[in-house]
Every structure is written in C-alpha cells, then in structure tokens.
Image (cartoon, rainbow, N blue to C red; front, side):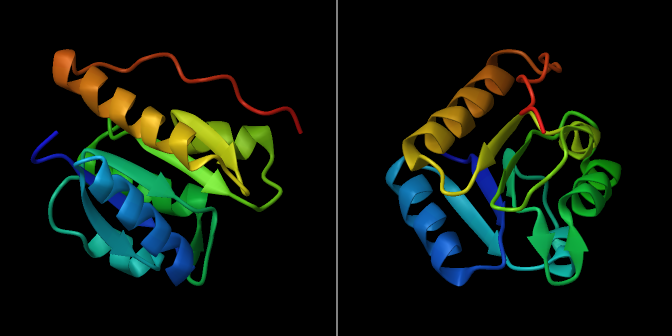
Length: 134
C-alpha cells in the first residue's frame, strides 16, 4: 500500500500515536492533526480520513463537510468517537463507517485497508455501512 496516506484527525495525542504506530505497521503513511484548523490546512488529498467527533475547534460534521468541500464527496471518512452522536449526525458526515470508543484497532485497520483497496480497484461511492441506532 505504498503511497497511501491516512489522515488522522484526533485531539488526543496518545490516541493519535496509537493510530500512527498501527497504520505504519500496516504499511500506510500517516498524517496526524489535532484540530479542525490543522485538518483543513492539509495540502494534499489523503486516501482515507479517521475523524474524531469532538475537537477543540469544531465537531465531526463541520470537519467532514469542510474536507469534502475541499477534496470531493468521494473522500472516505471513518468516524471514531466516544461522544454520544445521533445517527442522523453520523449520516450527515457521509462517513463510510462509525466506530465507538473504546474501539477494536484491528477492525479500524481492516476498514481502512479495505477502503483503500476498494478505491484502488474502482473509484465510486459504495453504500454506507449501517448506522448505529441512537
């Protein structure tokens, strides 16, 4: 998966480091940011985005919309949060998957790898995964 980049948007430094170590071990490059401002300042389109809901300067919906305006509706976003988020808010982000914290890191890595591999074969929007009931 050389050349594939995961943008991690997470304000908790320890969680960002966990993602970085795991994604690098899977052969992925990782860009880490801790705020909305940093996320929208990233210059190049990532292959996939891991997005926390609560950040110091914005929420997941706001950030997802800003990233999609910048890089298009096909940007794969995976929402991972410990916040109590309503299913309609998750749906509004356009996230392809939603994980609650605490999460299973292997599942997230598998989802990212599957998303990146799927996009390599065919660049199109797949139906989103079922949303959690709230």
